[in-house]
Length: 107
Length: 145
Image (tube, rainbow over all chains, first blue to last red; front, top):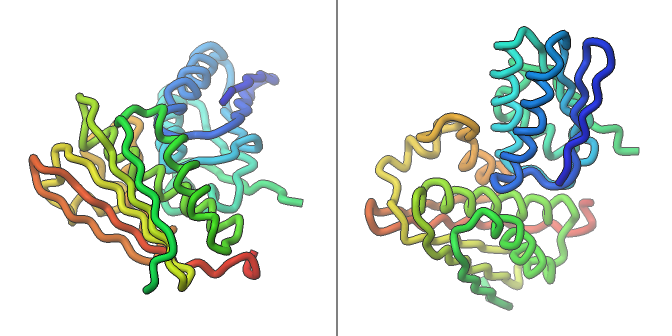
Protein backbone atom coordinates (compact mmCIF):
# COMPACT_ATOMS: atom_id res chain seq x y z
CA UNK A 1 0.00 0.00 0.00
CA UNK A 2 1.28 3.50 -0.80
CA UNK A 3 0.02 7.01 -1.36
CA UNK A 4 1.72 9.52 -3.66
CA UNK A 5 0.72 13.14 -3.23
CA UNK A 6 1.02 15.70 -6.01
CA UNK A 7 0.00 19.34 -5.92
CA UNK A 8 -0.79 21.28 -9.10
CA UNK A 9 -2.00 24.87 -8.57
CA UNK A 10 -5.26 24.51 -6.59
CA UNK A 11 -5.60 20.73 -6.89
CA UNK A 12 -4.20 18.02 -4.61
CA UNK A 13 -3.85 14.58 -6.19
CA UNK A 14 -3.57 11.51 -3.96
CA UNK A 15 -2.63 8.41 -5.96
CA UNK A 16 -3.52 5.37 -3.84
CA UNK A 17 -1.87 2.03 -4.62
CA UNK A 18 -2.58 -1.43 -3.23
CA UNK A 19 -5.34 -2.73 -0.97
CA UNK A 20 -7.68 -0.60 1.13
CA UNK A 21 -9.06 -2.36 4.19
CA UNK A 22 -9.48 -1.58 7.87
CA UNK A 23 -5.79 -2.45 8.41
CA UNK A 24 -4.29 -0.24 5.69
CA UNK A 25 -6.77 2.66 5.84
CA UNK A 26 -5.21 4.60 8.77
CA UNK A 27 -1.88 5.09 7.00
CA UNK A 28 -3.57 6.14 3.74
CA UNK A 29 -5.78 8.52 5.72
CA UNK A 30 -2.84 10.18 7.50
CA UNK A 31 -0.99 10.80 4.23
CA UNK A 32 -4.00 12.41 2.59
CA UNK A 33 -5.00 14.44 5.65
CA UNK A 34 -1.47 15.85 5.96
CA UNK A 35 -1.71 17.06 2.35
CA UNK A 36 -5.20 18.54 2.86
CA UNK A 37 -3.88 20.56 5.79
CA UNK A 38 -0.56 21.43 4.11
CA UNK A 39 -1.84 22.85 0.81
CA UNK A 40 -4.03 25.60 2.21
CA UNK A 41 -4.79 27.18 -1.18
CA UNK A 42 -6.04 23.99 -2.77
CA UNK A 43 -9.71 23.90 -3.70
CA UNK A 44 -10.03 20.30 -4.87
CA UNK A 45 -8.74 16.99 -3.55
CA UNK A 46 -8.63 14.19 -6.14
CA UNK A 47 -8.46 10.69 -4.67
CA UNK A 48 -7.10 8.55 -7.49
CA UNK A 49 -8.06 4.86 -7.07
CA UNK A 50 -6.34 3.81 -10.32
CA UNK A 51 -3.79 1.71 -8.44
CA UNK A 52 -6.23 0.17 -5.95
CA UNK A 53 -6.29 -3.63 -6.30
CA UNK A 54 -8.84 -4.33 -3.56
CA UNK A 55 -11.23 -2.30 -1.46
CA UNK A 56 -13.94 -3.17 1.05
CA UNK A 57 -16.27 -0.75 2.86
CA UNK A 58 -13.23 0.75 4.59
CA UNK A 59 -12.64 2.55 1.27
CA UNK A 60 -16.02 4.24 1.67
CA UNK A 61 -15.12 5.28 5.22
CA UNK A 62 -11.88 6.68 3.85
CA UNK A 63 -13.69 8.88 1.32
CA UNK A 64 -16.33 9.97 3.87
CA UNK A 65 -13.67 10.98 6.37
CA UNK A 66 -11.67 12.94 3.78
CA UNK A 67 -14.87 14.64 2.65
CA UNK A 68 -15.48 15.83 6.20
CA UNK A 69 -11.99 17.23 6.65
CA UNK A 70 -11.84 18.79 3.17
CA UNK A 71 -15.24 20.47 3.65
CA UNK A 72 -14.03 22.07 6.87
CA UNK A 73 -11.08 23.41 4.87
CA UNK A 74 -13.31 24.72 2.07
CA UNK A 75 -12.17 22.04 -0.36
CA UNK A 76 -14.08 19.63 -2.57
CA UNK A 77 -13.41 15.91 -3.10
CA UNK A 78 -13.42 13.96 -6.34
CA UNK A 79 -12.80 10.21 -6.65
CA UNK A 80 -11.23 9.03 -9.92
CA UNK A 81 -10.40 5.73 -11.61
CA UNK A 82 -12.61 3.41 -9.55
CA UNK A 83 -12.90 -0.21 -10.69
CA UNK A 84 -16.46 -1.35 -11.56
CA UNK A 85 -16.76 -3.14 -8.20
CA UNK A 86 -15.47 -0.20 -6.16
CA UNK A 87 -17.71 2.18 -8.11
CA UNK A 88 -20.67 -0.04 -7.17
CA UNK A 89 -19.71 0.00 -3.47
CA UNK A 90 -19.31 3.80 -3.54
CA UNK A 91 -22.73 4.16 -5.18
CA UNK A 92 -24.33 1.97 -2.51
CA UNK A 93 -22.98 4.25 0.19
CA UNK A 94 -24.41 7.53 -1.04
CA UNK A 95 -20.92 8.93 -1.67
CA UNK A 96 -22.15 10.47 -4.98
CA UNK A 97 -24.14 12.95 -2.87
CA UNK A 98 -20.87 14.19 -1.36
CA UNK A 99 -18.37 13.86 -4.16
CA UNK A 100 -18.08 13.30 -7.89
CA UNK A 101 -17.02 9.71 -8.58
CA UNK A 102 -15.57 8.38 -11.83
CA UNK A 103 -14.94 4.88 -13.16
CA UNK A 104 -11.65 3.59 -14.42
CA UNK A 105 -11.17 3.19 -18.15
CA UNK A 106 -10.78 -0.62 -18.15
CA UNK A 107 -9.46 -0.86 -21.72
CA UNK B 1 -26.19 -30.11 -1.66
CA UNK B 2 -23.14 -32.41 -1.88
CA UNK B 3 -20.08 -31.24 -0.02
CA UNK B 4 -16.80 -31.55 -1.96
CA UNK B 5 -14.27 -29.94 0.31
CA UNK B 6 -13.97 -27.91 3.50
CA UNK B 7 -11.48 -25.45 5.01
CA UNK B 8 -11.25 -24.39 8.63
CA UNK B 9 -9.19 -21.40 9.73
CA UNK B 10 -8.59 -20.10 13.24
CA UNK B 11 -6.63 -16.89 13.74
CA UNK B 12 -6.22 -13.90 16.06
CA UNK B 13 -8.46 -10.86 15.60
CA UNK B 14 -5.57 -8.67 14.44
CA UNK B 15 -6.14 -6.33 11.54
CA UNK B 16 -3.07 -7.61 9.70
CA UNK B 17 -4.97 -10.90 9.28
CA UNK B 18 -7.74 -9.24 7.22
CA UNK B 19 -5.68 -9.53 4.06
CA UNK B 20 -4.47 -13.05 4.87
CA UNK B 21 -7.96 -14.40 5.61
CA UNK B 22 -9.63 -13.08 2.44
CA UNK B 23 -6.71 -14.40 0.34
CA UNK B 24 -6.82 -17.84 2.02
CA UNK B 25 -10.58 -18.28 1.69
CA UNK B 26 -10.74 -17.04 -1.91
CA UNK B 27 -7.78 -19.25 -2.88
CA UNK B 28 -9.54 -22.29 -1.38
CA UNK B 29 -12.88 -21.45 -3.00
CA UNK B 30 -11.16 -21.02 -6.36
CA UNK B 31 -11.20 -24.82 -6.85
CA UNK B 32 -14.76 -24.21 -8.05
CA UNK B 33 -15.20 -22.73 -11.50
CA UNK B 34 -15.61 -19.01 -10.90
CA UNK B 35 -15.09 -15.70 -12.64
CA UNK B 36 -12.57 -13.06 -11.56
CA UNK B 37 -15.57 -10.99 -10.52
CA UNK B 38 -16.91 -13.76 -8.25
CA UNK B 39 -13.47 -14.26 -6.70
CA UNK B 40 -13.50 -10.55 -5.86
CA UNK B 41 -16.98 -10.90 -4.34
CA UNK B 42 -15.70 -13.62 -2.00
CA UNK B 43 -12.69 -11.52 -0.95
CA UNK B 44 -14.95 -8.58 -0.20
CA UNK B 45 -17.44 -10.62 1.85
CA UNK B 46 -14.69 -12.25 3.94
CA UNK B 47 -12.98 -8.90 4.48
CA UNK B 48 -16.20 -7.31 5.78
CA UNK B 49 -17.05 -10.22 8.09
CA UNK B 50 -13.53 -10.44 9.54
CA UNK B 51 -13.33 -6.66 10.01
CA UNK B 52 -16.61 -6.82 11.96
CA UNK B 53 -15.08 -9.40 14.33
CA UNK B 54 -12.02 -7.20 14.87
CA UNK B 55 -13.66 -3.80 15.29
CA UNK B 56 -16.92 -4.85 16.94
CA UNK B 57 -16.86 -8.34 18.48
CA UNK B 58 -13.38 -8.07 20.01
CA UNK B 59 -13.31 -4.28 20.13
CA UNK B 60 -10.70 -3.73 22.85
CA UNK B 61 -9.37 -7.26 23.08
CA UNK B 62 -7.83 -9.92 20.88
CA UNK B 63 -9.83 -13.12 20.42
CA UNK B 64 -10.04 -15.94 17.92
CA UNK B 65 -11.87 -15.76 14.62
CA UNK B 66 -13.15 -19.06 13.20
CA UNK B 67 -13.84 -19.41 9.49
CA UNK B 68 -15.33 -22.45 7.78
CA UNK B 69 -15.46 -22.44 4.01
CA UNK B 70 -17.34 -25.29 2.33
CA UNK B 71 -17.58 -25.88 -1.39
CA UNK B 72 -20.42 -27.93 -2.89
CA UNK B 73 -20.71 -29.92 -6.10
CA UNK B 74 -23.51 -27.62 -7.25
CA UNK B 75 -21.03 -24.73 -7.52
CA UNK B 76 -22.05 -23.20 -4.23
CA UNK B 77 -19.62 -21.80 -1.68
CA UNK B 78 -20.66 -21.36 1.94
CA UNK B 79 -18.53 -19.24 4.27
CA UNK B 80 -19.18 -18.92 7.96
CA UNK B 81 -17.28 -16.47 10.14
CA UNK B 82 -17.65 -16.92 13.89
CA UNK B 83 -16.37 -15.07 16.91
CA UNK B 84 -16.74 -15.43 20.67
CA UNK B 85 -16.95 -11.69 21.16
CA UNK B 86 -19.50 -9.27 22.60
CA UNK B 87 -22.43 -10.28 20.38
CA UNK B 88 -24.95 -8.03 18.65
CA UNK B 89 -27.80 -6.65 20.71
CA UNK B 90 -30.00 -5.56 17.80
CA UNK B 91 -29.22 -7.50 14.61
CA UNK B 92 -31.89 -5.73 12.59
CA UNK B 93 -30.35 -2.37 13.38
CA UNK B 94 -26.79 -3.61 12.76
CA UNK B 95 -27.85 -4.75 9.28
CA UNK B 96 -29.34 -1.38 8.33
CA UNK B 97 -27.30 0.31 5.59
CA UNK B 98 -25.10 3.12 6.91
CA UNK B 99 -25.80 2.29 10.57
CA UNK B 100 -22.62 2.11 12.61
CA UNK B 101 -22.16 1.94 16.36
CA UNK B 102 -18.64 3.34 15.97
CA UNK B 103 -18.84 6.46 13.78
CA UNK B 104 -15.62 8.06 12.65
CA UNK B 105 -14.08 6.24 9.72
CA UNK B 106 -16.55 3.33 9.66
CA UNK B 107 -19.07 3.55 6.85
CA UNK B 108 -21.77 1.32 8.37
CA UNK B 109 -21.91 -0.63 5.13
CA UNK B 110 -20.39 -3.96 6.19
CA UNK B 111 -23.60 -6.02 6.14
CA UNK B 112 -24.99 -4.24 3.06
CA UNK B 113 -21.85 -5.05 1.12
CA UNK B 114 -21.93 -8.69 2.30
CA UNK B 115 -25.57 -8.96 1.23
CA UNK B 116 -24.94 -7.35 -2.10
CA UNK B 117 -22.06 -9.67 -3.01
CA UNK B 118 -23.65 -12.95 -1.90
CA UNK B 119 -26.94 -14.79 -2.42
CA UNK B 120 -27.85 -15.23 1.23
CA UNK B 121 -26.64 -13.85 4.54
CA UNK B 122 -27.55 -15.27 7.93
CA UNK B 123 -26.59 -13.68 11.23
CA UNK B 124 -26.90 -15.48 14.55
CA UNK B 125 -25.76 -13.68 17.65
CA UNK B 126 -26.03 -13.74 21.42
CA UNK B 127 -24.83 -10.89 23.61
CA UNK B 128 -21.78 -11.97 25.61
CA UNK B 129 -21.45 -15.24 23.66
CA UNK B 130 -20.60 -14.30 20.09
CA UNK B 131 -21.75 -13.99 16.52
CA UNK B 132 -21.83 -16.24 13.47
CA UNK B 133 -22.28 -14.78 10.01
CA UNK B 134 -22.95 -17.30 7.23
CA UNK B 135 -23.07 -16.41 3.58
CA UNK B 136 -23.78 -18.55 0.55
CA UNK B 137 -22.96 -17.82 -3.03
CA UNK B 138 -23.92 -19.77 -6.13
CA UNK B 139 -21.17 -19.38 -8.69
CA UNK B 140 -21.93 -18.90 -12.34
CA UNK B 141 -18.36 -19.60 -13.39
CA UNK B 142 -15.90 -18.31 -15.95
CA UNK B 143 -18.37 -18.37 -18.82
CA UNK B 144 -19.91 -15.25 -17.32
CA UNK B 145 -16.63 -13.41 -17.01
